[in-house]
Amino acid sequence: MNSLNRSTSRCGVSLIELIVVMSAASVILSLSAGLIHRVMHAETAARSLVNIERTSLRLATILRRDANAATTAITDTAQLADGVFLRLESSAGSSIEYRREGQIIHRSGFDRDRIVSREQFAFAAELEVQVTTETSQLILVTITSRGRAMDSDPDDPVQQAKSLAVDLQVVAALQRDGQ
View 1 (cartoon, helix red, strand yellow):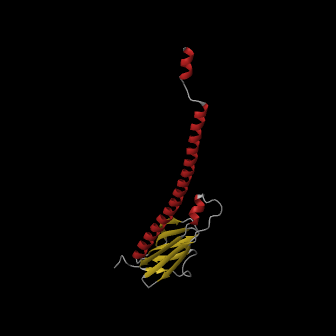
View 2 (spheres, helix red, strand yellow):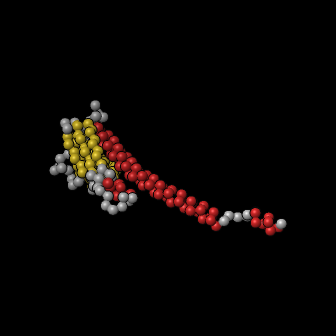
View 3 (cartoon, one colour):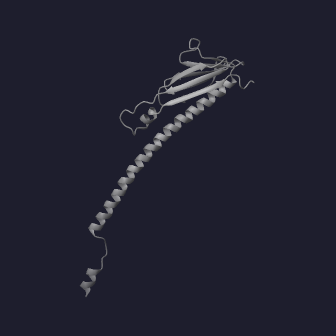
C-alpha cells in the first residue's frame, strides 16, 4: 500500500514542463526586447525633433524681440565682420550681432564696445542663413539646413538628428517697442 501512495503523489515538476515554461518565457522576452528597442528608437527621434523645434522657437523669439527694440538693422555683409549676418543697433548705443559658425548661431550683445551678453543656438546640421530687408522697417531671416541621408546605422541618435531638416523664417519689425 505504501508503494501505491508514492506513485500517485508528485512533489515537483517534470523536466518537460520546465522546458516548456522556459521556452515560453524566452519567446516573450525576445519579443518584448524588440519592442523596447523600437520604442527607444522612436523616443530618440522624437527627442531630436523636439530639441530642434525648441532651439528654433527660442531663436525666433529672441530675434524678434531684439529687432523690435532696435532702430536700425545692418544686413550688408560688406559692412559686417566675418560670419556676422545681422547687426541690430539701438538709439542708446547698444547693438546685437548674430553670427553663424557651422551648426551654431551666436548672439552677442554689446554696450558700446563691451560685450554684455552671449548666447548660442546649436543645431545638428550645417546651417544656411539668409537675411533680407522687406521694407526699411521689416527684416526677414531665413535659416535652413538640408537633412543629411543616414550613412549606415539608422539607430544612431546623432545620425537621426543630422537627418532632420531645419526651415525657420522669422519676420520682425524694427522699432516696434518704441511706437
